Image (cartoon, rainbow, N blue to C red; front, side):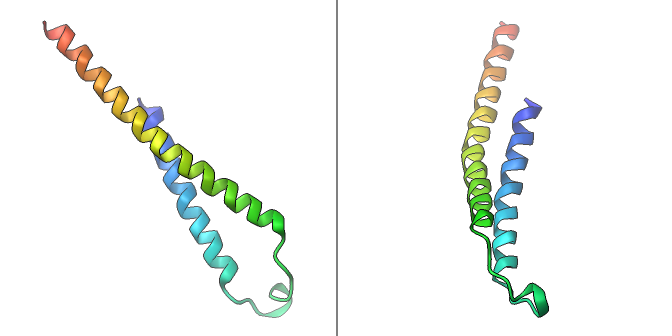
Length: 80
């Protein structure tokens, strides 16, 4: 059950990390750092992290809901 909460936290962290990375990419940089171009591989990494976070988020919520529902049905069976 705790694994599902950890998955939820990781998915939220991945989504926020993507927005932070995009924000840092858009900020202007000075000196030799700001003169370069952005590699397409960086965008692949950002998109894959975003997709992973978006896929894990509803999956973890579903697993938490399913686990609570199963725990409730088990507690009803024990009380009978």
